[in-house]
Every structure is written in structure tokens, then in C-alpha cells.
Image (tube, rainbow, N blue to C red; front, side, top):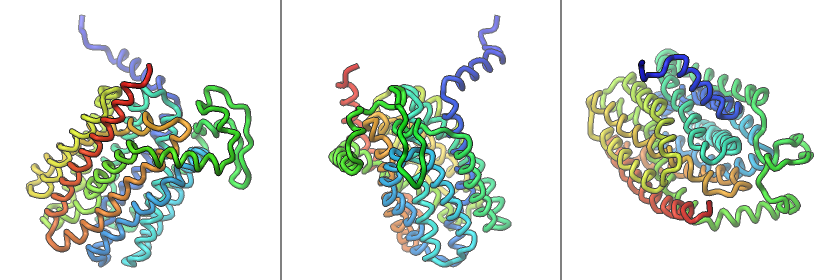
Length: 438
């Protein structure tokens, strides 16, 4: 008798696995897939689009840096709103405003100030959508399933990262402007889907009627809807906000973690912004860049869930930090290797580091934050966007002065420094987990 499971058994297991998560988790995952498809159709080629419109490398870096500045400025607001008025309206606001920004890119031409404003809007809206989605997933899943839920959402994102750029390069080669229009339309479709199909999950908002123009009317809240102490509901809103921000401001472990993630995301964003410019300077074909993004997506799609399940209760510090060694090797490969096979190999190494690190990085904030402050913590994770705000302009001037090699050597150094900070913060969090009562 064969030890291999039958097709029927496999389908039964798959059905049971799907049913083990709330239906809303899958709805949010589908929304992320469509939203990310629209974004990845155009974002990896935005730097090429601007360069072809006559924008200099120095100005290009400043334009790209405007999005993370917006993310930082609006991150706390987006997190606060997702706790205050709910995950759903914040998500809808984010994707709809992002659609308007994409439509603007299609007609901005080479106007640097207008491009910077549109990219600022795009960064602001991503700050609203992503933290609210992550907070919703944390609302819906128990702690031991959150890593898997985040992995599923990340798989959807990376699947879009695989086919989005391939669609984008086909459109970019024929009519660059059309990609922005299609991406904006997909974002509007996601907004409509969220409005019609996705229920609210925020603990303090579920079960309430809500209007943009008046305060929510509270209905009876059950124990399953919130874990927040009932005494907190009687405090004035201003006092609640001040107390919440004092708690977060004094959280040294969280801010050390965010410093590490700031360096990591600053380096990682160079794949989307300056890697296509570096490859063009090396006379490598544009299809190879699209293939690199597809390789990264395939590794993440097929590898993320197994490794997230394997590391769902693993120590955070050693895994988050050691994975950044693979980031550094990958970036050094981009800097010094020029054959297509070697560049693809570099992306494979970096991608393994990405799924290894993200399996534990996605757990840090939900496991560390107080339940009633989760949305605010998630919103403040956008502080890590400061890395992109500083690194992108620096990369533009470095590339203008010395070429792409210097840019990706810098990326390798930032990855190692960020990994060290993640190790320090993760070690403190792991110690708290061990000391906490069962």
C-alpha cells in the first residue's frame, strides 16, 4: 500500500487548512494580491520612467525619498485611526488615494515637484493600508497562528511581485503611461471590494455603527470582541492618546527594533529603485530585471509559508539577524557580478534571507505590543520608512558620482548594521517571552 497521500486526501487537508482561518483572512489576502499587482506593475519602473522623462539622478533620488517621508509623517495617524474608527475605513482611504496618485503619475511628465507630491501621496496611502491590514490579521488570529496569517498575506504580495512586473514591463515597453492607469484602476477595485465584502475586525470598533461625521455609537461589547480593560473606555480620548503615546515612547525595545528595520528597508528598497538603473548601465536587458523580481516572488511564494510555520515560535533574535548575512551577500553580488546567471544567483541568496527573516520579523510587533495599542504600534512601524527617505537620495548622488557598485556596497553595509540592531532588540523580546508566565 502506497504511503503517499491520495489526491482526495490532499484536497481534504487543503480544505481543512483553509477552514482553520477565518474567512476574512482570505478576503484580506485577496485584496492584498490585487492591490499589490497594481502597485508592482509600475513601482519597479518608476525610476526608469522618470529618467526617460529627463529627471536627473539626484532629483530622482529626492522624488523617491518623498514617499517614505510621508509614510513616517502619517504612520502614527494611520495607526491611531485604525484603532479609533476601524481597520476597514483606513484601508479604503489608503487604496483610493493611492489610485489618485497613480493616475497623476500618468500625466505628470518630468515635473519634479509634481512627481514628488504624487510620490508623497503614494507613500502616505500605503501607510494607511498596510498597517491596518496587518492589525486586522492580528485581530482575527490567535498568537500561534499570526505568523502563518502574515505569511499568507506576504505570499499574496509576493505572487503579485512575480507577475506584476512582468505585466508592467510589457506595458512599459509599448505605452509607459498605461501602466499607471491600470494600476490606479486596480486600487479603486480593491477599495470597492473592501467596502462591500470585508467586515470590521478592530476590537473597539466591531459591533458599532460608524459615520465619518459623528462619533460612533457603541453597542454592547462581548469578551470575544475586546481584551482591553473596561476602565479604559471611560477615559477621555485626549487622555487615552497621551497615555498611549507615553507608553510607546518609553518602549526602548520597540525603538531599537525600528532602528534596525529602518536600515534594512532602506537597503531593500534599492532593488525597486536603483537596481534597474544599475542594470541598464551594465547593458543588461530589461527582461532580466523582470526575471529577478519573478525569482524573488517564486522563492517567497513557495518558501514563505513552510518557513513561517517552522519558525512560528522560534527565537526572534538569531533568525532575524543571521538572515541579514544573506542580504549582504546578495547585494554584493548585484554590485560586482554582471553575468545574468550570477545576478539571478544573487537574487536567490537574498530571497532566502528575506523569507527567513520575515518569518520572525512579522511576529515581533504583534507579540510585543499591548492589545489595545496594536494599531498604533503597527502605524508607527512606518518609522522604518525613514531608511528609504535617506537611502534613496544618498543612492542617487552616489550613483551619479561613482556608479551602481557603490550603491549596492552601501546596501550590504546597511543590512549588516540593521541585522545587529535586530539581534539586540530581538534578544530583549525573547528574554521577555521566556520570563512571561504561561
